[in-house]
Length: 436
Image (cartoon, rainbow, N blue to C red; front, side, top):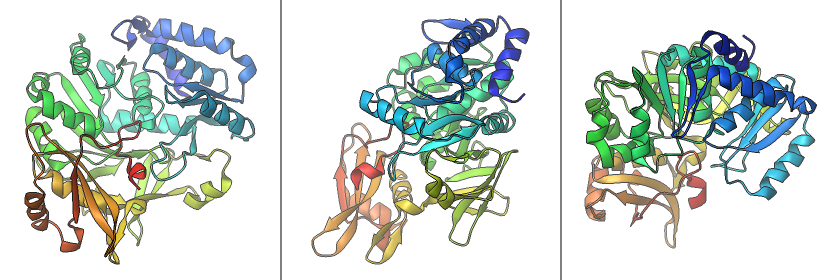
């Protein structure tokens, strides 16, 4: 198999009547999906070698369009569903002047939390490597129904389409996590095993508002995967208690690196920040500056139209990330924040994620974000934005005492503010850039 569409064609023969895509309103079998993709691809013959920019959606039509672009020999460039017309036109113009490598399947735009959004080129080879990594590491199977709740123009959810197709399993598409009833209705779909990918913020929402209901699916939930942002250990432990027989994965991945490593934290240890060992088609090392370097077939081909930026991070098949980490004696990778998120206060460097993890251990805090603030006397200080659980109010002195018991003095914030919500990027990560 050279492309994911080769698996799609195979499935139309082997599993013709198997549901391929399910939504709350519709079901499409593999035979029907392949027929629609093939017909759509024939209308795109003139687009061969060109970048096709289009809006993402949680629909079967999105996937038909996506697969058809590949089948026609073009490059898929899915964007957020609400991207302005001006931005869509701008990207179409930019990409029309780019020489894209022949094997490129997608250009995926990062959410730009640390800078301007960049177009990451992903090859067909990388798609298949990511797919096989997930099939083998997470044990995808043919009888699985996988629920996708997040945007499919980002690697976190788009990458789950691949192993489902590789195994001939079933995708259940949802419009986000705002309607918890819709999520549980998806889990009610008649099948032996269900699984899903949820960002930590969605997991926190389920645990806060419907923990008892989630527990009723303990026998059916084969696994839950999380990633994109750090998950608090308190949430990890609660999820393990509710779903004692489910595999609960914390995965290390990014648009640039692809799917690299994963850790089943339902192992009685529940190591916070651990993302496990490398998957079959990936490798990682940590350099003397604690920067994580990745190798393998899952890596991006580069940034579209930006050779200088590509060369700054990708050299001789190795990608230098902005993530900091360490490797334990068992070869497991532990994340320690990002080098570009580090806050310099009084000449001392603080990883904001360390402060946030310590604060979340308090229990009555739903979410928090540590950011830099300007003080008229001492300069840059730490400020903690806090979202409290229902029925609780922020008590700054109590939180300060809690943090002093867990952190060095210079890591304890000087300023605290209770907020209704933490701003997030489209794919659920804390939008740190917007607070700078």
